[in-house]
Image (cartoon, rainbow, N blue to C red; front, side, top):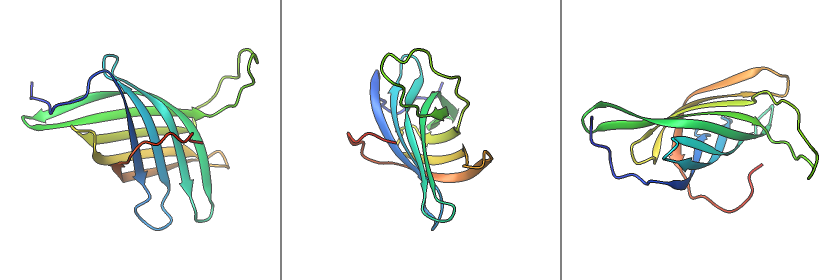
Length: 148
């Protein structure tokens, strides 16, 4: 097996901006918690677009990651996650509704988690899936603001 770059182990945060590199392109801001023992990722995402039609989609992301090493010294990380609508459920409100996904994310990043490319899709206001392919991924500083 190929040697992996030094990686963090345990639980750590990662934040990314995906896409948005072209005028009018959707921007998917993602804040994830990575749990390496379980190879899982969980977090939130916010898809925005300022052109017509404007987008403002919040999503709870749940997924996994795996290392892809095809040649020595050529490893990447595949992150896959499914997003579900954010529901502000009242405290003590009981069991909530069954939610259908509103986003899917497939992202390949370098073995240091810093950059890569992604394909994502989202459910638009009319209930149609829209897909963005080969979107650039760049790590950004995580902040303590609550994402939509």
